Image 1 (spheres, rainbow, N blue to C red):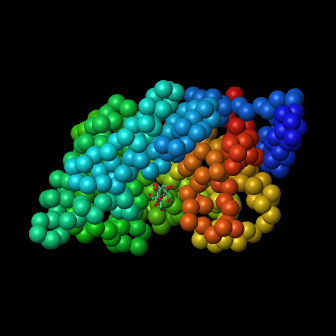
Image 2: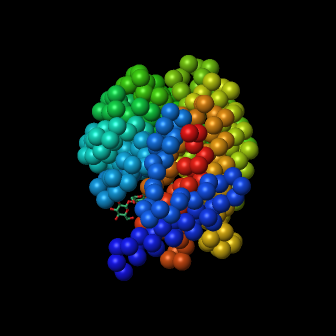
Image 3: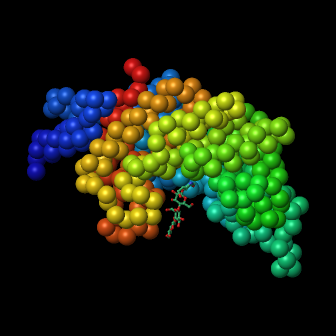
Length: 364
Ligand code: G3I
């Protein structure tokens, strides 16, 4: 295939995906002028909301140009998590995360920090005390303090917002907090301490609770309760990160809208922090329609979400959990025939219908 044939194939596939995405509210496809138009989502949304992506040390090298073109904010998908930055007590590793920070700074991108405390990513040494005994509250808090002070201090003035705690809510627990080692060893005030340590290390950083399924009423109610408690106790919490690992089938746009409104009314900022839209239902490997129809539905729903964002000045950033469908956690450890396509760019980094829907939803 020669270059012009190649180009035609790309233009045709672009037009096809854009056309599939078409409804009365989705954008017209780009004109086929012989060149492949690929506008920048970050530029289209400039002054409205930051457009972010989760990145890793690999794709900033292999897809750096594309990332810098389409996004004006990044978050490390894994490199800033506790087990990555302090795998052994007192031994800090920031090399991988530093590379991401340097990349972002060289392209004038905002940097989110994810995350300082997560039950799934707490190294075992955190819980080990002297002589094979389990560590007690004071030791764990001292270790948490050093971890947060060191990491937030290292990125002071560079990371503008931190997911201080990640996935701490469990609506089935009487106090709405997950029954994990943090809760069992320290008690519920580990959350207060995490925020206070982070604030002391960088008073200018915005500090967030990051959580999944915040659109579900029971989860939302619990999160409200926990956040109100923090605010009443004067804990420096600034915002809620809504992960939004959603599906083409759920949740409804109005449920998302209601969640954002709920936290805005508490005077908090909102960010969408880990957005992706699966073609599947959660833990179900069946495709319920043709791939084409599901991608079309995906585009329509992405458009609806982004148009709804215009009613939310409280939403300061929307971050997708990955750069392209070539690499998404939703295909990690999945069966071979499970091929999810949850993001805006396809496996080749080309715009999908979803991309054009998000582009068209921007105010220009
Ligand atoms: O890098 C190693 C590689 O060296 C090794 O050979 C391989 C063997 O399994 O593992 C690789 O590490 C994996 C890493 O992703 C990088 O691909 C880890 O096993 C795997 O557990 C890790 O998964 C990440 C997961 O968080 C757990 O940290 C996902 O990439 C990441 O997308 C996911 O992100 C989370 C958010 O932080 C919080 N919200 C939910 C979201 C999705 O689960």
